[in-house]
Image 1 (tube, helix red, strand yellow):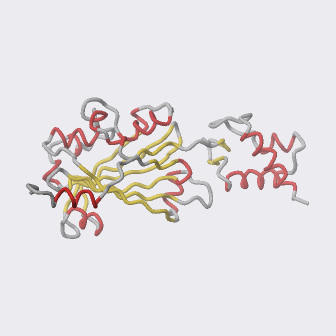
Image 2 (tube, helix red, strand yellow; image 1 turned 180 degrees about the vertical axis):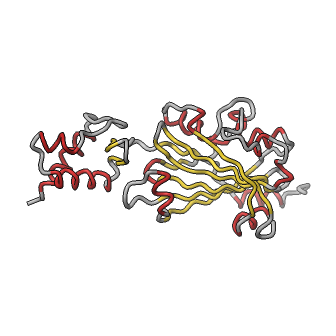
Image 3 (cartoon, rainbow, N blue to C red; image 1 turned 90 degrees about the vertical axis):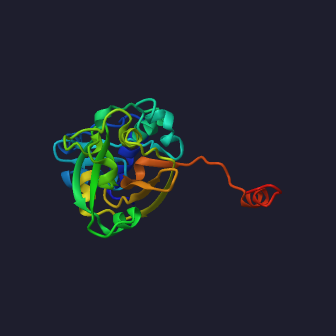
Length: 269
């Protein structure tokens, strides 16, 4: 026979999945369920902890126990970087994901701070710099409403961004079109990029910052952005709450055999 806390957790889970408790809605206070005869304080507390461990709710001081958004955001691949979005408009990458997911957004849901730092090893390697060389770090925390979804820190060589909006120490977004538009205006048009992703256990600071439930991993992203001549103009590290994103990639399938045939054709250079 399942313990009382498990039975209560299962009942509450069904109400969440049915939509009776909607995403963002606060569950009743523990004392309310105790007074309603759902069990003792320890029983209700254990049920809430189980729901949190299962990723159905989040609990924090001042906000109580709140139902999590269950449908993950689409984290687009190629489409989120379409130049028409940020060069000709103001649809920066995190907004492109929200639009594709049919979710509301505000520009203020991405905040940023900028600082000049010494390049750690992986940043130095990406930019071809010695470890400890000066670089600019542009750190962003992205939220959906009040819920953090991920962080992203971009690192730039000073000679690429000195005097631009990207190194403005005033907190806030980089401006219309975001960082890629700033690089474009400075003469560094992005051409291609490489993304590497892997899952890992979060640090205690990341658990607190992203308000992760117990046991949830994070997905770490490394993004290297190049101009057409192969110059690295940005190296970024992102840390994403694993359950809040569905990663989506759409690309043309290469045919290296056809390419070699074309290169070997008469008159090919």
